[in-house]
Image (cartoon, rainbow, N blue to C red; front, side, top):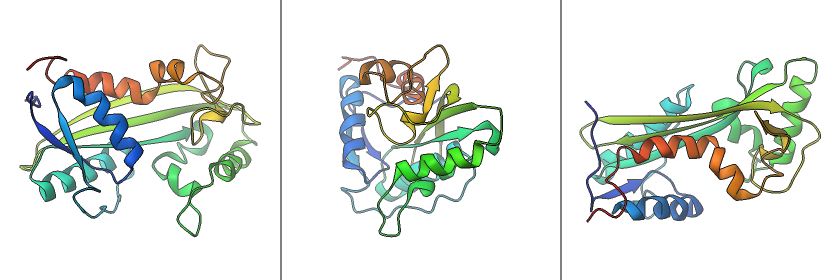
Amino acid sequence: MTRRIEAGARICLATHNAGKVREIAALLAPHGISVVSAGELGLPEPAETEETFLGNATIKALAAARASGLPALADDSGFSIASLGGAPGVHTADWARLPDGGRDYAAAMRKAMEAAAEFEDRHAWFTCALVLAWPDGHTEAFEGVVRGRWVWPPRGTNGFGFDPMFVPEGSEETFGEMPPARKHAISHRAMAFRKLMAALPPAGEP
């Protein structure tokens, strides 16, 4: 049975990324939802041991809900290439990780291109999984997928991550070339959040 977040509720965002907190908090504010992040509460980051986006988002959401005593929202997202069996997929961030903990997505994109270059299939996609979890273990999941093809060399300086090497279906521009508003209207994250909105109070409800 679907469970909804009530107007006026406070939820925990299962992230330590301040930018993501600001972005999601702004999306939830019109629905009367206030947020506190796992980072603000000093909660540890759980190991992401699943091989699916939904699996890892569920791990993060449940850990934050149980530790905070609040409903919690987590996301997991990444870039997949068909000819690589869906890689980098849930390991998207790992492909870019540097020894010092930073990330080099230019190197990650080149690694992906070199691995996939011998194949004719250019099909690729982005996935975003969102999971709402409650301290009692109940979860609600929402997923968005945008399909297209990978290109090389990378094009555009907008977006982040693998955006400059991905052209969504129906477009000739990469996510890296698109104005942010156009990308956000069709992105995997936008799709997942539209589904999430159905589990929230109507915007403006007291």
